[in-house]
Length: 108
Ligand SMILES: [Zn+2]
Image 1 (cartoon, protein in one colour):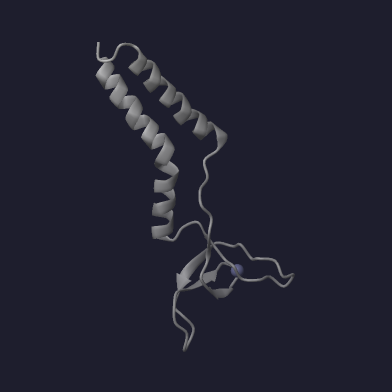
Image 2 (tube, helix red, strand yellow; image 1 turned 90 degrees about the vertical axis):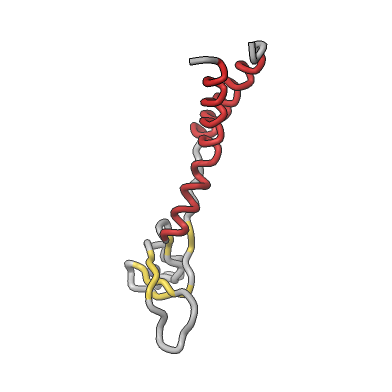
């Protein structure tokens, strides 16, 4: 593996480590997964159960969702996937490798 290859690999890896959660969220929002019900429970709390697109009730328009608890509401909440501390450490470390590689008289 040459230095150019190593550099290319680390740049790609850093970009992936930085962006994979955004890609994940984009796919999740497109496929409708990670959606939760915004209906109210009897106690007045937000339901939060997994919810799916459903046929709108009669004389209603828009996108409606029905949850596993039986609520039918317009709209749904989305749980974005957030990276943990470890994921951030990974791309910071990878970026550090790029800096090291570049500082070694690249391209030698
Ligand atoms: Zn619900």
